[in-house]
Length: 224
Image 1 (cartoon, rainbow, N blue to C red):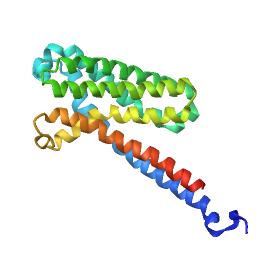
Image 2 (image 1 turned 180 degrees about the vertical axis):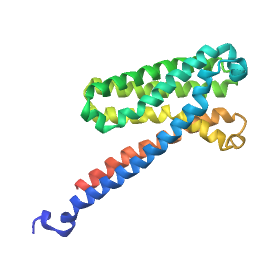
Image 3 (image 1 turned 90 degrees about the vertical axis):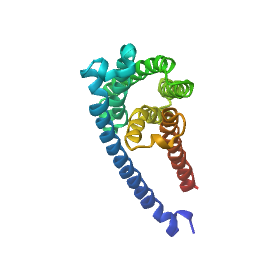
Image 4 (image 1 turned 60 degrees about the horizontal axis):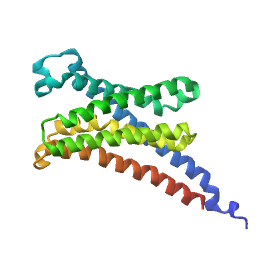
């Protein structure tokens, strides 16, 4: 009997269709949550610094307010533009818009990352926090740089994966702020802010990698 006529093989297309639906539904729910959290971060935390430039608002960052504003502007731009890179309908409708939104995203990462390196070395919160913030900047630039190199070389699938990793790192600003508001800092030891920064990019990036590689493993399994 040919393999293609077996009951299990007959169910494979339907199973793959169901799997695609589950992944799309999961992706939609995740995207919706990210949009809500990102919008809340921008409205409640980022924009107030742009509308109230005073020593009372900036606190200890007042002497370095230009760098902080630069960081907020760059990271805010990346946070806003990032979701357009995942909108498949936009890519199909206008690749020109997709390319320019991608360029704006890279510009936002470059600006925000540059300011973060300065703030890391002048934060005044000790070496652990400076190292954690500086490492975040390196990871942010590295993932974004790999996405750019991949698309320049024509590796579209790898480009998509690296863009996703980059945006996960971009979302560190939102994740850290959300967890801080939930009261997690007292449980993070002697350098809570440093630990929080490490957690908020490394664990989401690990989860993203498990999902990306897990899908490939399951796809190869289904192809056997």
